[in-house]
Length: 401
Image (cartoon, rainbow, N blue to C red; front, side, top):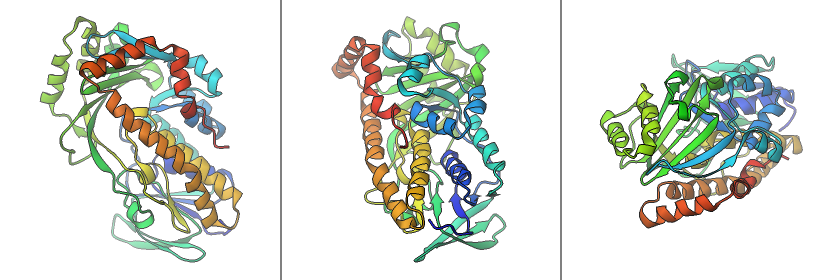
């Protein structure tokens, strides 16, 4: 990318887009962020920031504000959805800080988004424009022309040395920039809810990230909002995708799941689920680009480039990683945006593909039933915390350099 006075355009003010905008601004580059929403309210509930992502945010100077709202679980505990028995786990907290040099945080998505948004708004060389949707891109020899439309129908164009498409899993820029498949429904849906701390059963109100595995479903919960609430996620199989995002739950399906958790060792988990009052549903999709997600002066990052299933809790982390590698590649190829984007893709693709495949594998393993499920549970009881930790060194130990 040249030292043009024209701004870089980032389409999408989610976690990945704001991280990229902030990193570019910190290098003295002017940025315009276009966001199609008219209100910057982040949907979802909690998000996990493993060390590969948290170290990038800390290096951006966001450690203090994030630390005030995040929780650092002391361990991951894996339990059975059949009887509540503990199967295994791995140390987090101090142990993972020492192992990887950064914390494993869990935080409300809205809190993370708010910290990034405050930082971007305070950057003098970033302009944030809401209620603007990109409608067309022209990729010329030495620049891109971006056409966008306001909510009132007004159309404008911007000339830019680089367009970064960060508009999420339902990206409208993907077909304009890349050649990857449209994300497809993978027969899973997530039910999400936030439970206030006072309603969490005492046995579960601990600084742990807890994962429950069972046939056809798994459940994750952990403290957020500085310990004032618990994020709860239930992932189950589904035949059809819901027509929407963050929809109200169908209570009959939820009640059927809760009633199936009848073993005495699951009483606290049942109570936790029943304490949730505003369950929302997300259908789960993924898509891996087949060849590329860049042109000469336009690229994609995060879910817009490579939507992954949440079975490794890495969707947000990959977007943050993408931003770091993209900005690093631009700095390594000054004046040559096409070369920078090629280097960005080349570096990111193998890692993204591995996360994609491991998440797919976990989507099967988490929901095993019958003899295979029994074998999985036996193997987990035999794993030490060290072996569990070592299994994810490739993931959590990643650094932009």
